[in-house]
Amino acid sequence: MAKPASNYRPDDVGTVTPYLTIKGAAKAIDFYKKAFDAKETARMAGPDGLIGHASLHIGDSTIYLCDEMMGAKAPPTIGGTPVTLHMYFKDCDAVFNQAVAAGAKVRMPMADQFWGDRFGQVEDPFGHCWSIATQKEDLTSEEVTERAKTAMQNMG
Image 1 (cartoon, rainbow, N blue to C red):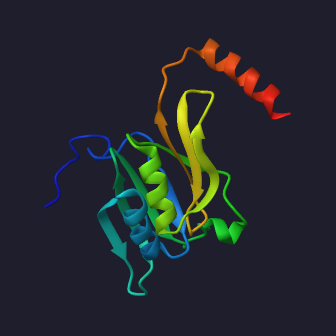
Image 2 (image 1 turned 30 degrees about the horizontal axis):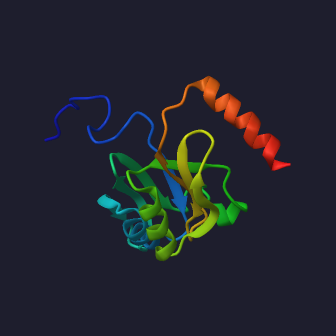
């Protein structure tokens, strides 16, 4: 018999948990394992093989994902995504290179940024965008604002 929940959310899930709709969720799970060392914690597939729900841990965070169904659409179906998932790692260069080796497309090469992060961005083979970063400097908002002005002037 089920017992009442001890918490308002599962203990291993944060308050905000991204839920990705993917065309080819099973392949995406394999990709995320290779690209980001994701750990699969749950998978519910239907008799047709489509994944109705899966849970992965990347570092200390959880993402949920499923195949397209019940009106949910993946980025290729809607022509792209307006969302980027941002991740911090101790060694962003290693993770960035690992993601590219696993099949991600570089959207923004890894570089030191004016806001104090080393940062790059990739698109996975399923149309989702991921930014990968390591914080290199602790900056005040004033320092970031001043650096942003300089960076924008240098852009053209």
